Image (cartoon, rainbow, N blue to C red; front, side, top):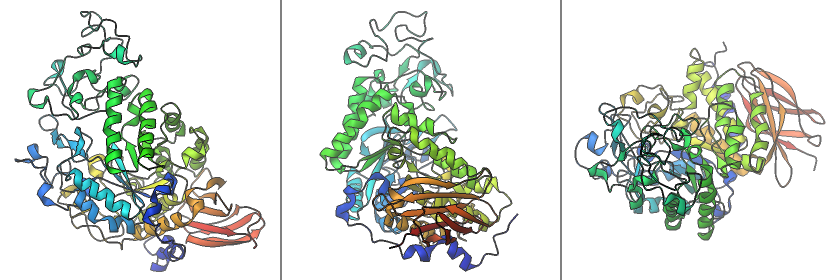
Length: 613
């Protein structure tokens, strides 16, 4: 196995490509111009507010009194609030902008149920996905005024703000009499537990005249007066009015069929680990959610929504919700409101994602297939033809490449874990220099290929998680969580026990350089792609991107092998020379239509091709 530890500082600098990129960097766009940018013009930075920075320790307990099981605050436990808030995020905008990010995707900020779970299974709503009040910022994060201040400060810098929203479910408030004291509550289907019988096909008749949940009219749902068709739902007295707006406290607006299996009917009608699954087929729920999230646009002028668990909501809901949000945004003077749904999938299967842009009519989805392609090839041993399968699938999206180019791409996140973690697991004998090189190669792919690159907070500081979910949600400010602080980081001798807002980590420097190159090069934001080279084993991947106005070609070359390579790569026949914009390896034009590329192990090159003047 090739050892990387002997690489010199010069070689590392070439890998990062900072000097070449610096010459291409463009100044940040004036704040007045940010509304005109298309979704694909952005570099997104994603973070969970609780894990980013603590600007106001006074709100750490969310105004509650008591221990962690009451307040949700325990900075030593990975599943509880740690103290990060919106004031902390606002004061770190300099840091995020220095990384080259132009848009913030902020994890859910709505008021959550502080603690959920049975005895011994409790954790807190620090992540924001257990909402009780859809109209207010969670007190652990600050106030609505703090959110307004964040949006104002970001917009003043020309940065966009995307909210993470949830319409599929609320916090776990509704209980089922048949499941009290049990850990699980199995899903009960419409066939075995129809709406017009109480607790099964042999039960007493209820809900006369209800035509089923596929008839989406107010008159039909007015006949659904009882909710005890599958289980007997009830709300504990202490929580009967906890949800806001008040209509959310009515059990009729939920499916009440038990826990999802994530398959078939239960995928859109079952409860996620007990979370109350909204009956999004009901016109009252549709109208209520349009009012809730339209109001956030009206009040704060935000720039987009990331939609949690989008695949678990019926398509008819999105057909009404999305146009309503776009209309509210246009009325607010926001012409390029970016809406992208979470359709979690862990194979390179673009069709699984694309169907949600056609059937659900979502404008975009998170590109889980892109992530998997990078995992398989750079944190794995698959051939580079994996990307051919990925990009061939662009034709399947609702508007083909015009949709694909707006898909947020990523290599790791808060649910699935960090890319560096996958590298270490796949190559346990690799030294840190090799792991770093693989992560840098993945960054180069993320920041130059089609889509909207999305950077997960901490990746730029070399965070390496123990796993996914709670294990991949480390603090950017000084952490007190032992299972975070014993992790060995990349590009740094520090641990997460110290704050990580410096800009000297090689991953930060590489990300910042490539982000600025991307923003200064229209071919890398809006340009079409053409596959130039790929193989059935690790090695060369070459893709050209073209300036949408001038047609100028930029060749992207990546080496997923641990051996150097020299190859001829097809290019446009008018090119006479190549300039290296990032990485190293752009050689001479050997003949019309052929460029010599020489790449180091796990290296990359961004080559601007020049035609005669």
